[in-house]
Amino acid sequence: MTNPILELRVAITTSDYERLAKFYCDGLGIEPAAIWNNGDGHALILNMGNASLEIFDEAQAQTIDQIEAGKRVSGQIRFAIQVPDLKSATDRLLANGATLVHPPIMTPWGDYNVRLQDPDGMQVTLFQVSDKK
Image (cartoon, rainbow, N blue to C red; front, side, top):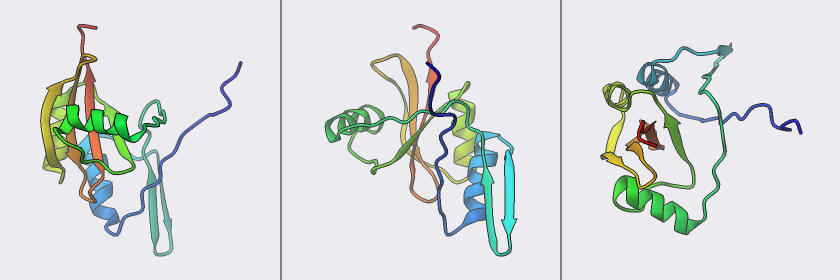
């Protein structure tokens, strides 16, 4: 059976477009796939690899936040981004305005995760899959 979904896009609206565009582009080391300038409006698309949608109940969100941040901190939406080098990705995002929520940890499922917050307050988990799986 062919997958009926071809792409997932998440749109973020911000009051400081330049700051958030720099945070994600420079912080993750990626170039925009598309840029729109419509009069006074600005937008860009960043290809973020494979996309998936995770749906948690409150108990699961509590469990994940407890593992990654030591307490319940994320809102209704949190990004989780797989990176090939957790340390360098964390350093780049911190240099571009991220706030460290919790230092890197080894999860019970064997990934290395770090919890950050983007300049607008979005919770972001960076994770690197362990070679030991």
